[in-house]
Image 1: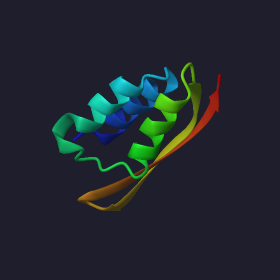
Image 2: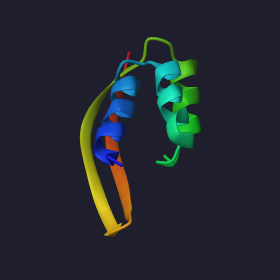
Image 3: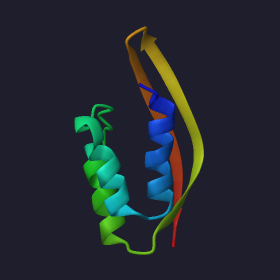
Image 4: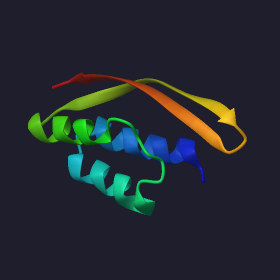
Length: 78
């Protein structure tokens, strides 16, 4: 799984304020990336139309050879 690329596609949908596109990306592969906070993020995007964001930073922590945790910082504006 190319986790970083899939994470970035999700962050790009958030940056565009594309709640439906973000949700579709979550549903791909049964949400195998298991983003913590995905539901509140989706709700936030739906509740504040016209919202945009900028990806400030993205990092990954490889816990072991089979696991990775991704971290992203986003700044939101209208």
